Each structure stands twice: as structure tokens, then as C-alpha cells.
Amino acid sequence: MPWELVSTVLLLVVWQVLAMIFPGRLFPTPLAVASALWTDLVDGKLISDMAKTLRRAAISFTVAMAIGIAIGILFGRSRIVDRLFSSWVIVGLNLPAVVIAIVLYISLGLTETAIVLAVIINKVPLVITTIREGVRSFSSDYDELALAFRMPLRRRLRLIFIPQLTPYVLAAARTGLALIWKIVLVFEVLGSDGGVGFRINTMFQFFDMTGILAYTTAFILVVLVFEYWVMRPLEHYVLRWRMVRA
Amino acid sequence: MADGPRLNIDVDEKRFAGSAAPLLEDFHVIIAPAQVVALVGPSGVGKSSLLRMIAGIDSDYSGAITIDGEAAAAAPPAGFVFQDSRLLPWLSAIDNIRAVREETTEAQARDLLARVGLAGSENAYPAQLSGGMQRRVALARAFSVNPRLLLLDEPFVSLDAHLVAGVQRVFLDLVRETHSTAIVVTHLPDDAAKMADRAIVLGGRPARIVADIELTPARDTRSDEQMRALALALSTYDEAPN
Image (tube, rainbow over all chains, first blue to last red; front, top):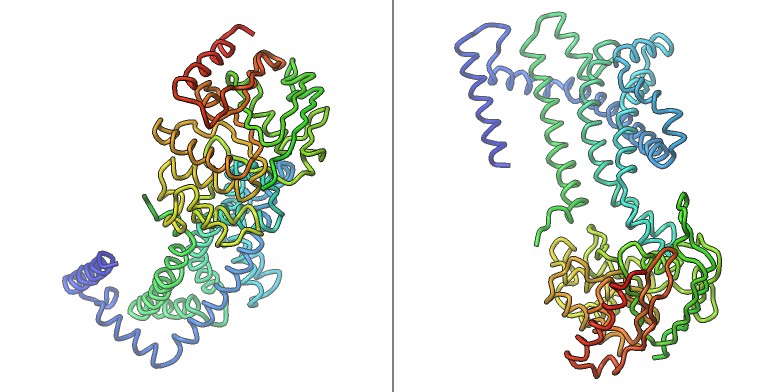
């Protein structure tokens, strides 16, 4: 963490120096951006925009993870299902996100459902792929162990299946979140009634670079808070056995 | 504690899919209660497969294996020790013992760990334990499941000699206390000479019993010299052409 803090400070210093060397409306200083951020925060628009975006991201993330994990397990366990539908997953992985969003906007209108559904459809194939690989990598030795000691199914699931799957769920969550943060904003730019992406699009119309960077900074701060206060502690706790050494 | 169970092994045929010759054919052995039997033979002869059939892991064979008259797959699970320690890396030593049998209390698991010389290591993860310590946890786990019937599949492979001696001592102490019936699969006549009351040497394909020897004097009274002599005698069968 101290190194990451030093790195952040260094970035701000470099930015400030560059902005002083190349002054202009399109290259605001970090201080100007911080000031705009504060104004947006006090003004109230930033909080409501952020809340809308985070709500969309949270719903899409939860639903996509649930669906992706269930289908990924099925793919990993059943060779027939995998053979039959793996090409669908490849199509899903390579389908341009914008196409999905536009198709859904045309079909469902510029609605909340369309945005959330578009994000889910974009993310699910990624989760399926990660979870499928995880299930495929399960050790048959542990299955034999469970068989030898006649462990009941629920106990097997809790003590053997889930612990093996967890690192892959965390990996899917991390890569999925990175994707969702980005595409929610893109879809909000394409069409929505609010949110960080919507506001950035409005600022774009006025070439308000300071405002755009203020919103971007606020968004990045939220992502970092989530990373350091939620994802990493969770990962440390769940995978603590990997961190111990003799 | 009551003696371990009696085992009746009557395998008409055990064959792996796609294999020309069966692994076992007309294979019949009776193992008396509280007897420690060493299954000796070269790699691939079918020792581990037979152990898995006795454990009820593999029921794809014709014939019957009974444990105190009950079909192997329906009998209470045996205390199984695998070639590797096969501990779940995400569980502590004590939780590894409790994982395989719901009824095992924390106090019982602690007691078992103390008996294998691991008091104080209850909360250590497998990665924090040496190879020898991991095998001891696996042994404690097997005893927690069923101290009456123990099945050990090459339990000392890849352990240093001094660690092997330690784990063997722990095993023999526990077996003496609990009067277990135990089958130890090994390719080393030395292990059989140190640990077993009886050695069954397997060879050929399908596997047949090359020799079935009561090892005397009794296990606990054997001197080092007598063990060496027994190991030497067993190795002559083991090396004989099948």
C-alpha cells in the first residue's frame, strides 16, 4: 500500500508539472480537477449520477455472476453441454459490446432494463469461460478422497467443491468488474437518463475537459475503494491458506 | 476396544476397460480380525486397485468383498491413507480431520493429533507442515474415520528414511492400542517386515498370490536383525519371475 500511495502521488505530480508546461483549457491541472470534483459533489449531481451508475453495475454484476457461475459449472461438468454450446460462448465473447447495447436499445427502448441486460449479456460469457476452466481443473484426487470417506454431497460441496471453485469465482469477479465499470459508462453514453456516462457525454458536448476528468477521477476513486476495501480483504480472507508458508 | 473386522476377498474378475488381460482373476483371500497384512509386489500389479475395491471406491468387478459379512461398499468406511497425504490445503490440520467425518468433535481431533505427535499444530495449514507431519495428519484422519479397519496405500512413498521410521512407529502404536485390521500396500519388503503380521506377495497378470507368509516372530518382538532377515526373504519372492 505505501508504494501504491507513493505511485499515486507521483502520478499527480507528473500531471501537475505537465499541465503547467502545457497550460490550456484542454489540459487542466489536478488542482482544477479537484476543485471541479468538489463543486460537483456539493452541487449534488455527482452523487446521484454515481448512485445510478453503481446501482446498474451492482445489479448487472450480481446477475451476471450468478448466471455465469451456474452455466460455467454445467459446462465444466458436462462434456456434451460444453461441445453443444461452447461456440455460443465464443460468439458471446467476441460480440462487440456496442452492438449488443444498440440491439437492446432498439428492442427495449432506452430503458434501465436495456442497459442492465446489455451489461449482463456482455459479462456472462467471460464468467462462464473462467468458471468452466476452474471446474475442469478440479482435482480428481479430492473426489476419490470424498468417495473413500463416503462424504455426503452437501459436505463435499462445502469442503471440496466450493473451495476449489472460489479462486476462479474471485478471478471472474475481478475481471468482470473491470469490464462492467467500463461498459456501463459506454452504454450510459449511448443512451440513458443519468449516470456518470450520461453526464460525461453532456460535458463532451461543451468540451468541458475539467468536468470530464473530475467525474472520471471520482469514478476511479470509487473503483479503488472497492478494490482495496472489498476485493482485496475478501481475497485475503478466502484465500488465506494460499498465503501461509512453512 | 473390539478387534478389527474380518475381511473376505473373493474377486472373480477385475478388468479395466480396454485391457486385454484382467487385473485380478479368481483372487481369494481371507484376512483375520486385528491382523496387519502387507500387500507386496511390483508397481502396476494391482495392489492399489485391490485396496480401492476393499475401500468401496471401486465396485466395478465381479465377485464379493465383505467386511464382517457386509458388502464393502455398504460397510462403514475404512480409514484410508493415500500415497500422498491428500490433505485439503484450504483446511487446517484439525479441520482436515473433522472434514471427513461429521461426528468427530474438536476434542477428539485434538486428541488424535496429539497421539500422532502433532499437539500444537492443530491450526497449521498443510503448507505449513513438513511431509512427515502431513502423513501423520493423514494417519490421524484415517483413525478418526475408522480405527478398526485401516487401508494404507504406499503411505511412505517420497518420505525420507528418518520420517518413515517416525510415521511407522506412530502407526504401530495406534494399531497396537486399537487392535485394528490393517492392509498396507507397499513395494518395499522392508516396510512389510517392520509393520505386518502377514505378507501377501503379488505378481503376474492377472495378479496371483506368489507367496502368503505369516511373519514370525510377532511384530512387537522382532529385532532389527529379524526384520532384515524377513525383508530379505520377502525380496526373493518379490524379485522372482512371475
